[in-house]
Length: 493
Image (cartoon, rainbow, N blue to C red; front, side, top):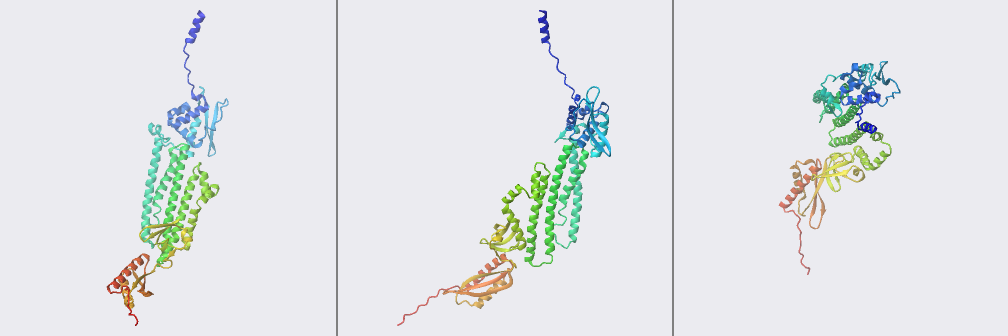
């Protein structure tokens, strides 16, 4: 009976709750908890992993920053304890001296960063670009986090960007004033000043470099600094690409103005414009392609794509080349068009049954402005493979003709005077060619053909309509319109 009572009492006793183990009793757990607390901005808890004599928030922050800057993979390379009382985590050599970061087992069995390792943090920070900036900020600026950064670090990045933009704006204003000063003294009439390419890119460039140079003082973690540097590199590449694009625009403008400065012939001026415009378009495409390729190279996941684009080699390059062979052919045709010039910007052409003016020669297409304001768009290769009437190949002066039917009784010399007077009354006539001849004789009328000249195709069209109306009015008012004559002959006796 007594035995049963004792057994009942034994099993009825509630077991004591197991006490949690102190994570500092394990060296790897101790290092991991220290880094996690510091990354969460909880430097009060991180300080509990330091030697009791130096267990402060400031020292925890400095040690964490030193580890992130000089030994970011410390946890991965950490050796196993193997019954040792001290572990060497990292050995950083600075100016011939060794600065060691260690973990030491204290008398109470916990593993902590010893005094000498904490003191080495300041030297490591000085060598690797860290600082004590932000140590005395209010606690909420360190504890509050956005995008994985302490609030004061995020505000610091925004401040650096604002300062960089302000510095860039000052330089931008100086560049604009210098540009205006140069334009006022240059013999070339610039559409935009030669330095107009700089203000926008310069402002962004200065801002990016300001952030790049001073961001280490914000004591970002190694991964955060790497990510920031990656973003800055990508934006710098994009800015340089933008700058080169604008440089090509101004360089083309300068070359066009320089080569055409002593040329009075409009045909040669248009020829120069075409020779510059097409290569300029091709260079722009190349610059953008190279810029995108270099940006791809910055990312590990798509680095091979960027290298393939830069080298223009490999199976992918062959496939892309085969798929885009039509476009590449058009680009090469554009180069031929620029240098052999079967057509030029502003030429009057007759193509696909339409009469119009070459409005634009692009990289792969040519735009024809038709007389009724429509646009006919054709591939560049069309003008190298098919016949095209170019009415202004050697000269923009153009000849045109009209035909009118008149009666046999029409005085030809008087008709010539009417033509000359009609041309003199029109500002569209260039004063060079005016002639009228009889080109056909039928049983009922004669055909008069009037030839005239104008400065270009658009003026010639309007001039022909004007002369046709004047000749028709003269024929009507003088009774010289064609008349069918019928003669009755009496029968022979």
